[in-house]
Length: 455
View 1 (spheres, rainbow, N blue to C red):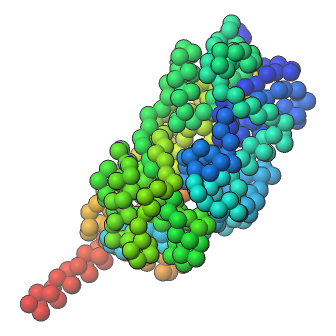
View 2: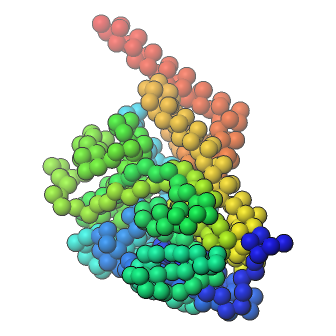
View 3: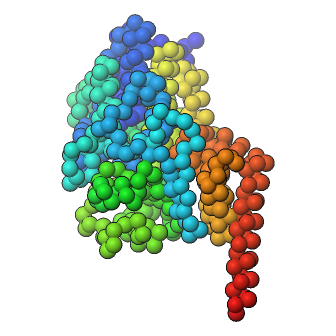
């Protein structure tokens, strides 16, 4: 077996991690823990110029900052408990709004904690610093406690010196790494540097999203948004997903679409279903904290090479959601491969690529499910029947809540899309859906007959 097929991580290895977000931090935490458990000395350096304590986009990784309940549970099992200063609000339900009405769906699972809403940086630009701690900074501190070194230099040049990565900053040599970990994310220009190395990596396809912070005040956010993430099924032109997430004194608008911009945010806020949740005559300030990040909607080609592995959304991530969870899965998986198997291209092919491929295959099912959901919500008769079914399930959960559970799992990432599909095509789910649609059609017919009788 050649070195490229299998190469154990050497004693005293130099590991360079490009990117200090969740993917880089998770890889570093677990790589350092495993190295200690195996009695192997390594020197791991995280390169990231960003300080995650700064307010606004300068210190933020441009994400809604929602940590799923399964992610909270997984971190707790690993001894990483989120402190109160991290969690801006614990969410226990989703509220879905449409022209057919609204319905609150609570978690179908028993967890130690619910969904956590966090800030990825030091909070919105201009906000009060009190009570805000960056989720990303918290993970970086945990990585440092495990022995990782943080370096604020910008790695602007990467070379393969005899297949060994060589890093430079400002044309000055920084280090020669035994292993190079790309945790740079889809919003960084670093992807081009990895593509140019010639080992076959191609960055995933992306679409644009909008994250905007609404300063509404703690009392208003608590009273009108509560402990729920509000999803709006409005069929707005060019918008695939629209939601509002409560966070302390702010509510975060998240829009996903092809060409979303500030005008898209204003159009969303002017919709009657959104207006009723805002203070009377409230207007978005002329200057407000917002950003337009890219969102992974595809799969990277070959996110690994000899002595190189890429983690996080620059490799693979759950479709439309749970980017932090995917950073955890890919970062931890890569750390296990590096520590238990090796850093050769063959090691990553056999043990890491399977993790990415599983995420990518499941996303194909996710595309179908979201397409079906858009189709249902786009037809008034089906949409009304769908919401009638959800409302009946929440009113009397003792009869079962299959559709509520599916919708919860689709939007939180608590289960794989494949498992959700199997539940969707089950006879019980089909029966309850047909019953709900027929009930909605019957109501519409009775209203129509009554109107004719009065006429």
